[in-house]
Image 1 (cartoon, helix red, strand yellow):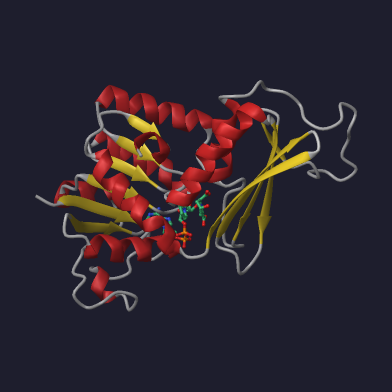
Image 2 (cartoon, protein in one colour):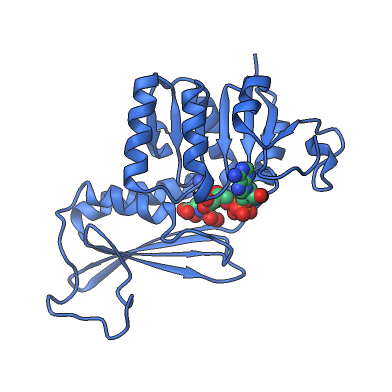
Length: 265
Ligand SMILES: NC(=O)C1=CN([C@@H]2O[C@H](COP(=O)(O)OP(=O)(O)OC[C@H]3O[C@@H](n4cnc5c(N)ncnc54)[C@H](O)[C@@H]3O)[C@@H](O)[C@H]2O)C=CC1
Ligand SMILES: O=C(O)C1=N[C@H](C(=O)O)C[C@H](O)C1
């Protein structure tokens, strides 16, 4: 039996690529799409998709779930809508695979506890690219030996959230293996606000937004007389698609929420 998947955000940069990926996957069936406005009744009515993509479009997630009974709900929308979508999916017993970034810590905690109560599998994946997941794992390894670290993330200028979900997750993983401490000179001060970046548990995060970029991150580790640089680049959104397929398969085996695909690889 193929895994029945519903997708939110099918017209977006990630959504379009993910629709094609799922449609081409024999083990998966795209049963519905969620958009925020009426854009036609089926995906094949949108000029961006081939004519044989006969997948109904809904604007109401509860109705979508009731009428199309998906196993998995894949969200690639916006930080504003994803939290509510995830709650609706969990309450309906549909397993969420969330690629959308921008969750607060409190929201992640709430969703984790809801998924455990419901015994429903859920995955929140800040970055589906295998190379980015490896970069995060290597960063955690390196921080045990070189705890002075700064993160620089670079993205296209249409991105809504900063810092990126990947940078936040990298900082969280690093903070699991190093003592929290302030970096730089104890007396340093900013003569321009924000010069030292955002701060996660003492780790500075710098966000760059420019046209032409896709998704890129550099993690710098400084030591006496040395610098270790870890760098990952997504040049194309195809880089995220194998991770999406893995996440859809893996979430079917879970009965709780997992934050980050690195725990399942
Ligand atoms: N986890 C990962 O590996 C990746 C995650 N992302 C994240 O995925 C999200 C989407 O990114 P993009 O595709 O670049 O954005 P986008 O702006 O191109 O697409 C978002 C789509 O969501 C739709 N949308 C907005 N509100 C909605 C709602 N309430 N219901 C249904 N659809 C709604 C919009 O119409 C739009 O088509 C962002 O949060 C981004 O950070 C992006 C790339 C990789
Ligand atoms: O918005 C994006 O494009 C991306 N968002 C994710 C993030 O916030 O880390 C993943 C990837 O970096 C692309």
